[in-house]
Length: 454
Image 1 (tube, helix red, strand yellow):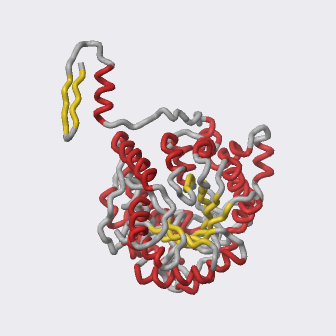
Image 2: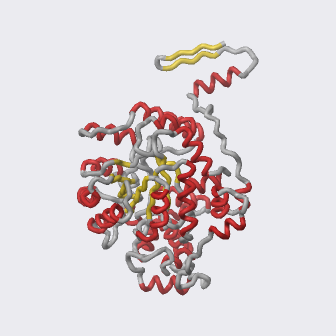
Image 3: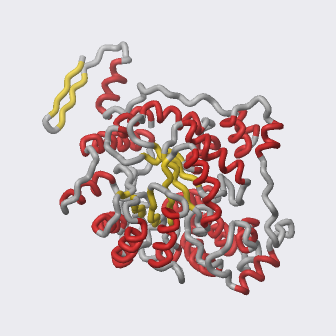
């Protein structure tokens, strides 16, 4: 990230989404790096554009609500390390769950972006989203409201009614549109949202766009200009960033985004783009990649039976876990993950739609007896943590709470060498030849290009 960060900063974005829980997990669990250090290193190079951190309501990194004081510290430490825009969402659209995060961000002077997850389910009509958007402005005073279509399941017709309804509800407050490209319609939906009142579009720089990801920054900017919009991004900088990322992906043998063909099954599963990537990799790691079609079909059934929650974190993981159990066992809901029973019992908040009665009975009967039917009161945790970790700063204290002592003991300093670069294959070849002491002559040529070296 670091070699291209300054170029990203000069590209003219309204904000750069720099970190969310998945990046915390990737930093600690896979790279043995401090995620707060990641924020600081990026902030040293990204000085003009506000960096955004995403917070999933009161869930932190797990699948169970945590105490308000630890949620507040989580937001506080992101801001202290360089985040200037806090994006907050609650998958149940439960406003009370948002209070600690919003209150802390505003107290510390950060902008607040409230994401309202899109859902196809009874009751999730234009009036509901307009009401929630208005509440975000009137109750919380947020700077941005985002219509967040994480599964990429909106349609053109719905954009044409929903975006104007939300914009009317919030007036001059910024309306952001966020969709993914799983159905192949993401770029078209983004353009249509701009036409009907969205003030900004969440994008990804190609080749990190498309597929499970977001519409491409370069294409959206170009197409919006074609239809008369003023788009405040530097196309040359976008091209530089895209070229760098493409070369990096090739060098590291990592996949790039490929435009998806139209896929109507996503309207049934409503599975979020990032979660889909995780599901595919997890099934492959478990040796059951061949079960993916059956699991996706079962996800569609389980989601409806559990009251059609919006398929953003943590519900894709919770529902897919139940779907996998159903596929692998002869009897559906014979094995019930603890998180599913907690969800059914209201641990995450009031459910917008009821759980199917027969399914609820099976969940309660087969779920762990250690999960109480009534959610416990969540007590503050910071006093105990500060007593346990008397000599630690809040960053490390928070990480030890999230990941445990053993994992944090193994963290190493993040390499911050900006000299890292990606070269053209010819450059790599010549550099390699230069290291050899034996005499040799190399000649190569291409379209409008020739090279001779002794």
